[in-house]
Image 1 (spheres, rainbow, N blue to C red):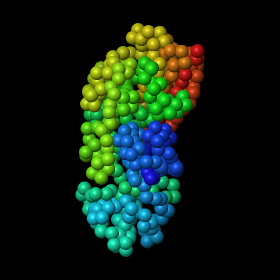
Image 2 (image 1 turned 45 degrees about the vertical axis):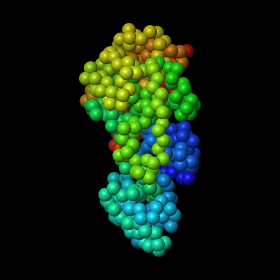
Image 3 (image 1 turned 90 degrees about the vertical axis):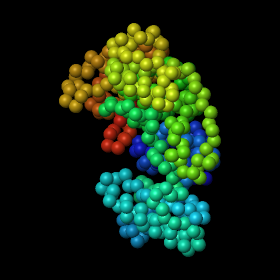
Image 4 (image 1 turned 45 degrees about the horizontal axis):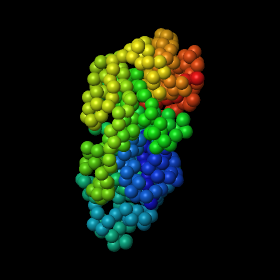
Length: 385
């Protein structure tokens, strides 16, 4: 079978990395989406556990986009997505701002085409806007609209645990994107990276409301962030084949630290919502005291959103702060330890590289991603032996 998975722009490679861990093979990639091939049971499991995807669909086909609605066509294969007497609705998403106004017209037109095809083939289906049996969804990417039947009623990249947030909070799918980038940089697949991390002590020194730490714990312990809402998020026909997946809560050595007591408390509360607060070490700590909190070469991996200048701050004022950061990391990281720094200000690129070199950190790779209008940067360093 073929499946269509939609994600935020820039997360496509991370999505492929994650899906391979569930035995799904990518056969096509475009902006915002990847088409996979595999077994239905593997796709069910992936849809339940994914930390990257926004929408998961049973795939029909891709169709050439045209602004002339009378030229729109669908293949008869679209009817294979329906059972007899199914109700449905259609939504077409166009990520590009300048074409948003076409969304409603395209949705209506494709709905009409589906009804016409069903009449020709004498298959009884009908439109129902509220709680339909099937939600036919299409997304515009490149020259095409990719269409399939949604398995999720609500976006999979939302998180019920994110109740306590601030303006420094990181989106959960971006948080997991950062972990997948570390894995790909080290050449480790989904399952090997899990085994690798279980042997390491992990630190987020600027945790804010906790997303980086929470997401990696969900991953390490095979906990779905959908576990409390599978009934409300998946369609009935799909939910019937979701098995009870076992969780194995491990005592991972993970520390979430922040200089703000308020944000640290928010991280504690968010982790408590999904019942993993007992396996996280929370500590209020300033950067300059990391060498007091940790032993020399104690930490294996650091992954954190780095503190950044305010909009009108002079970036030069942060010279000493970033120098202190790499000094501390040099002390607490084990030999060949990994540092991942996430930030949103492009001006920091050269400054971070400059300060890292003072302590012989090697830049392994850099990544970029968008979430809405916000662009994220990630630099991954390795401590020199």
